[in-house]
Every structure is written in C-alpha cells, then in structure tokens.
Length: 261
Length: 284
Image (cartoon, rainbow over all chains, first blue to last red; front, side, top):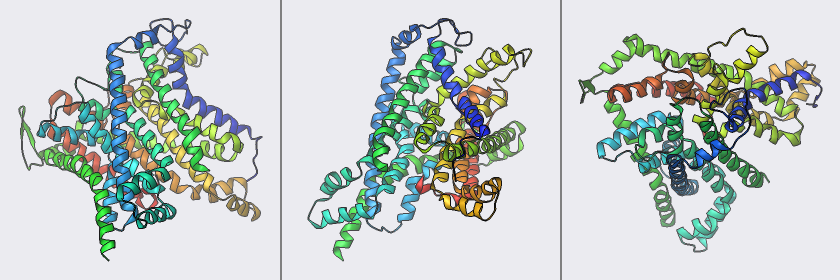
C-alpha cells in the first residue's frame, strides 16, 4: 500500500491516542515536582523535595531492596528451570511431551489472584508464613511459563543439530548446556530474564497476599495510596517508571535489535 | 537403541525440576483451593465438606451473583472498546508512519505498559479526580460548568482498564499487520476494490488472529484484576476479584473466596475454549 501521509484524520487520531496513552504518565511525572501538598493543577513551581523525602524514607528503601532481591532471584530460578525444561523438551520426543508443555504453560492463563490464593492456603497448611520467600515462589510460578515459552521458541533445527553434534563428540550433559546451548541462546535467555525480572518487580497481588512484615515496593506504594493523593507517591511512581523504562529501552537497543539481525 | 533411551532419560531429567515446580506450586495449591471451596464457614471455624453451599449461594444471593455480572459487563465493555480504539492505532502506525519511525512510534504507544500496575491506576486517579487535570481543563474551557464525579464510578474503572489494554492490543494487532504481505492489498486494489473495501474485506479479516489473541489476553487479565477496580472504581460496585478480597480480608472466609475463585477460573476457561482455535499461545 502506498503511504498516504496527507490524510489528516489519521494524524489527528494518532495525536489523540498518544495523548490518551501518555497523559497519565506525564501528569504523574510533572506533578512529582509539585511545590505544594497536592499533585493537582495549578502547577506551583518545581522542587525536588518529594524525591528527597522518598529517598530518605526507610520503609520505602527497604521495600525497594526487597523488590530487587525477589525480582533478581525469582527471575533467575524461572530462567534456570525454564532453560533446562526447554532444552529437555526440544531435543527428544518424550512420551507425554504435549501434556508436559501444556502443564508448564498453563499458569499463564490463570489469574494471578487465583495463583496467590491457592499458594496462600497451601502455605497456611504446611506452616510457611507469608514472607519474601513465599512471594518469590509465587513469582517463579508466573514467570516460569514465560521463560520456558521464550526459550523453547528460540530452539530451532539449527540449535538442535549443534547440540546433537556436541553430544556426539563426547561432551557431557552439563558441558552441552553450559558451553553450547547457553551461548547460542544468549539473546533469548537475556530477554526471558529481563521480562521475568520486570514482571516480578511490578507484581502486586501475589506479593500483597504472601508478604506480611517485609513487603515489596508495589505493596508499600499501595499502602501509601490509602492516605490519598500526594506528590510523594508521584515521586515514587516516577522512579519506578524510570527503572522499568530503562530496562525496556536497554532491551530494545541491545538484545531485540541483535535478535532481529 | 540404548543411546536413544539414554537421550530420553536425560531429557526427562532436564524437564523434571520445572514440572515438579509446576505440580508443587501450581497444581497442588489449585487442588487445595478447589477442596477448600467445598468447605463451609461455621462461625469462625472452617468445616471441611464436601458441601456445595458456597456455590449455591453464589448463584442465588443477589450481591454475590451481581459481582459476576459486574465483572462480565466491565470486561465486555473494556474488550470491545479496546479493540475498536487499538485497531486503527495499530493500522496507522503500520501503514501511515514512515518505516524508520515505526519502532519509535510503537515504543511510545506502549510506554506506560511498563509502569507498575499500581502506579498506573494511581496516575489515572490523579487525572480523573475532581481537581484533576481533565476536570480542570473542561471547567476552565467552560465545556462543563462544574466538575463531574468520575472517580469511584464504573467509568473510571473502564477508562483505566481501556488505557492498559489499548496498549496490549496495539502490540498484538501491529505485529499481525506487519506480517501481512502488501500484495493482498495491491491485488484487491487492482481488482477494483475501494480503499475502504480493502480494509474491511481484506486487511481486517487477516488480522483476526492478532485481534483474538489480544482480546483473549484482555479478557483474562481484566476479569481477574483487583487493583484497577479497587483504586478507580472504589467500593460502590464490587467486581468478582474485589469480592474475593473482601471475603479474605474482613471475614477470613477462605471457603467462599475459593468458591468464587473457582467460578472466576471457570469463566476464563470457557473464554479460552471459545477462542482456542484462533489462539497460538505457544507463540505469545
């Protein structure tokens, strides 16, 4: 189809949708600099006070640390389990392969709330208290399908042949995985890790139900919301947004660009 | 032959940890929840069943049944609205924006997708509030004489949800559109189709897989979400997840919360069965 740049309707629509999509985020960031107690118009001038307040808030910084810890570890476990499962299922036709794939992917189609509620009840019964560990386990449940699907999709005929060649030449199982499979799949492994990290970092309902004293950042922000609108919440939100955007832009510029080549 | 058997043993050993994890922390908890849904609350005690009283109550007591309909209504409105808004956006980005700007346009169009879910709902509360930027502008331009209450209504929930899912659907529809060969449109034009006919009769049907995948994800994520209705919609009209959280919080009624979750799960499964033939979950 010939590009028809001149259609004004299309550009008006584009502008309207971009406004709709970006308006809340822009408002969030702009009013995080508000020199006043309420993050609503009129804008009374810029200050960094709210950021200073957030950065000196101990509960918030602890929650931030907890979130980073849970995200880093749960993404790693998801990646490891997903990588092993994908390499196993991609190379031999096991009896029940389809069923296994189905079971591994299944949590993707279940609401996080249901996963959280099930885990909460089971942990109650076996006596595991709500904690960061419990939350981390839940995050692996939701991220394992994602990691598995990404890595499984990346193993094509070429990769399969290389793995077989390595084994035929006498490489041990761990050598095949570490020296052949992992480097060959590096872009997908990185993409899977960062996506899992972002999802865990943002996740609310599982963390809300499965933590009590040590909470993650989204849960801490949630408890902040109860005191109403405040530029401080804007400042935290802007920081969280900044971290996510940095991750996505890094991914876009490095891994996905390379993967497309 | 023995080599092949060894291969299979190694393959099984590699899959085993992930499968064990899925069974221990996904299948078992789910089974425990189904069992719990047939228990009963007597006073503050949970009495094991099987007892189907919870399910009977869900479908006979109006406040409980109401939540199911509220959830279904909101999800239906959001899904339809998001598809209607996202399709033209994806199409404009794919066909009108010059190729070298497309990645940037797409990245911008889904940028807030990556904000924390809680923060995104909060920022809509900021925008839609009585003193927020929307009311401020509308009153300032004398379009409205005084602010209209949007927060704590269904409208706020729908706006917050639609914002999120327009981004999701733009992604799925865009990736569908750019895979289409331009020859289809050219052939249709050569055969005398008008521009509108090309879109309606050729392009639109070809993007159905992207639309259905996105709509299904919208359905699943929207119907199971607690944050958006809680922050934007408030407590005037409860959705199913809000009702589930209410059972947990105020009363500690695990059996009822579990039964409601099983109903939620069943609705998602029905939706999946409904669009399974267009879905290629492996590729998502």
